Amino acid sequence: MSELSAAFVRLHARLAPVAFVPEVRLHQADEPIGLWELTEGEFRSSQPPPFWAFAWAGGQGLARYVTDHPETVAGRRVLDLASGSGLVAIAAARAGAAAVRAVEIDERAVAAVALNAHANGVRVDAELADVLDGDAGDAEVLLAGDVFYSEAMARRVLRFLLRAARSGARVLVGDPGRAFLPRERFRELAGYDVPVPEALESVRVKHTTVWELDPAPPGAAR
Image (cartoon, rainbow, N blue to C red):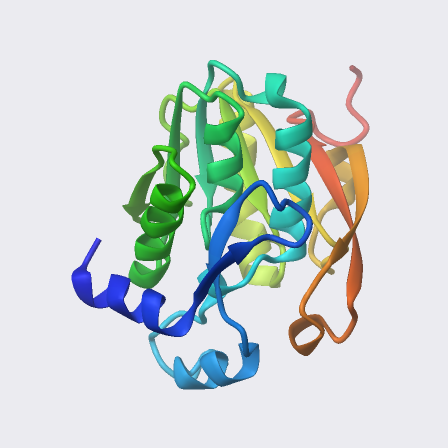
């Protein structure tokens, strides 16, 4: 974690409980739009948008599920893909995961994950890497919150998740109805009405589903 990135996180985000998972505290931005514009979050530069500064609905739903069903991760090696703030990774660590690895392509997100894990008294190994063209390593459970927000991202993510599932990992996804989720590849585990920042989502609550990936092709005999 670079000191510069850590200082940026501390300056622009305040440690506070997560709305739908109050057991976890995160560094969160009070005023979303200002930070988004400050970091040129509309993809006007090479700097990734500040996804790390907000508790997105998919992540909140997935973290709630893991918190309420600790047996999902307890004693297992967990990979949190596109970790953002580290919310899901922290929930997994709190639920008794044997090890938690959180991967991100944004250096500030890696700093946020490390700071947030420390604030919650858990260990999460935060890593700066784009792993989507590789594999999930030794992960026994793969968690991904709100990753199907663009068509290009969805294609890469699905291929990665399928490789992980076919290698034996259990794959769970939290999604608030994003357009590019291939629902035919998943089965529903739980649904929640999750509070979200209205400035980002244009609503105050988003219905969010926790899904489990089925590695078999759609329509294949089970």
